Length: 109
Image 1: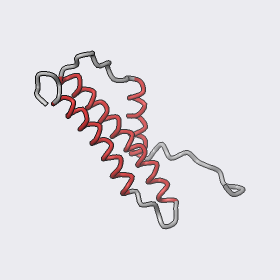
Image 2 (image 1 turned 180 degrees about the vertical axis):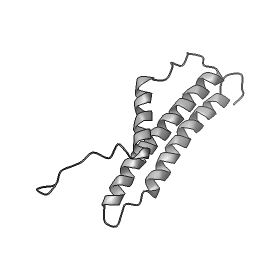
Image 3 (image 1 turned 180 degrees about the horizontal axis):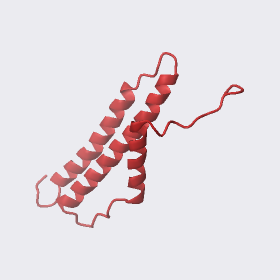
Image 4 (image 1 turned 60 degrees about the vertical axis):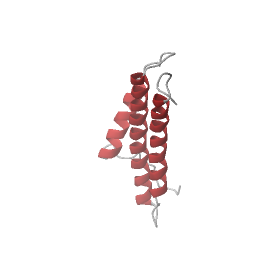
């Protein structure tokens, strides 16, 4: 960083960054409930919903930070692959739980 340049924090007035930051803090304060040894479908669905919401909030927060960086870099950053990877991760986590729900004992394979 050159002389005379001072780093500034991202603006807390950026609505995307502010809301994502607020949501992420909320997840830190209230973690998920434990899953019992023999969970029923609702236990697994609740965990899938929690993780989906957490990953969505984290993706929004990361996207706000990356968008800010892209505005400052000549030629910009192509964020499409990162957006796709974040969406894929969220989908994979949800799908893994949905698969587990369908394979619970007594539900068939």
